[in-house]
Length: 100
Image 1: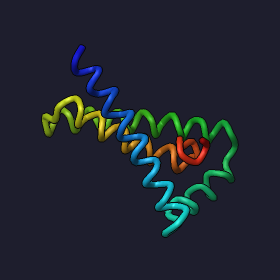
Image 2: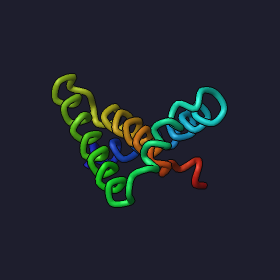
Image 3: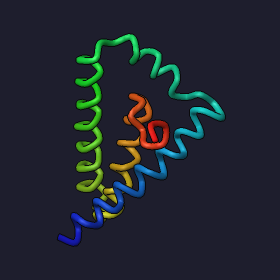
Image 4: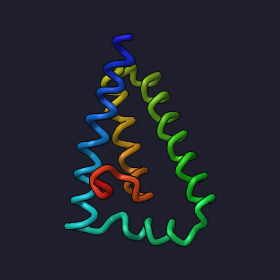
């Protein structure tokens, strides 16, 4: 149970912090994600939903592989998952900071 709690805390902290930093990076500095967002906006809502779901599955698979290969603990695993989900959410304009 302790591993699950530390993973959830890691995901929440990492997602919040990375969403904030990626929002600053996108809006104030380089507009890195605007090109991706422009291409994603051309797609239908169904296609966007499918791609978002596939991004979520890919983020989980990456963290599982990293946990197995690098033998990282649950909190670090949560940090990686939170970072990957923050990137996905920023690309699809689902991030916490922009929609708050």
